[in-house]
Amino acid sequence: MKRNLIITAIICLTSLLPVMAQKNIYEFSAKDADGKVVSMEEYKGKVLLIVNTATECGFTPQYLELEALYEKYAEKGFVVLDFPCNQFGGQAPGTIDEIQQFCTQYNVQFPQFDKIEVNGNNALPLFKYLKKKQKFRGFDKDNQLTPLLDNMLSRQYPDYKQTSDIKWNFTKFLIDRNGKVIARFEPTANMERVEEAVEKALAK
Image (tube, rainbow, N blue to C red; front, side, top):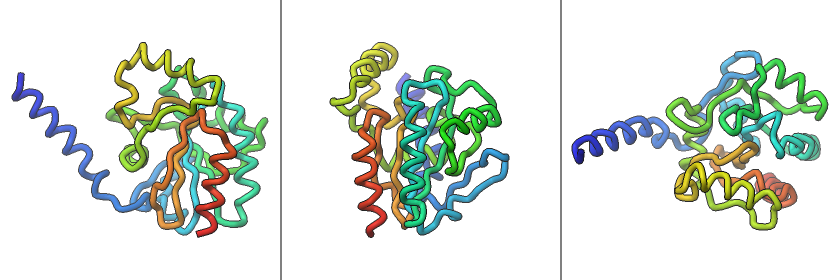
């Protein structure tokens, strides 16, 4: 039994080594909505907000706030990167084409990427790196959806607060102009607080 646990630990550590070796996000890549492989280096010098999204979630209206944020600060070097993910409640069930069509109602102009997984063995390496750099620190107490999320996750994953896994749709990672992951916002975070952090990153 002990030997099996040691072997499992070694396998897990080995799988994380490529991620742990990276110094910033620029060494990662992802497929965009058209299937083209995009290097994160294309966004070098920009302030980024990387978000895992869904089209049938209670937080889906955040697309409006994200687009407004993008339009307000784009000229200063700010970009939102949208990564649809169907891992949470199956709330992003469509194809990438269907998701893009859905997003037209929010007039989404920021870059959208292909559907991915953010947790588990098949998680996009970029997101493994993001989670390593910014851990889960709890949902925002002032949001009315926090008790619902906490109750649901506590039943399904009793130790969910102890892991760095992404907990739900619309988790956001803020990246500075040097590719460093400087903040993580849970979906319950007030967007005014997100905007304040974006402004501060842009000012540097």
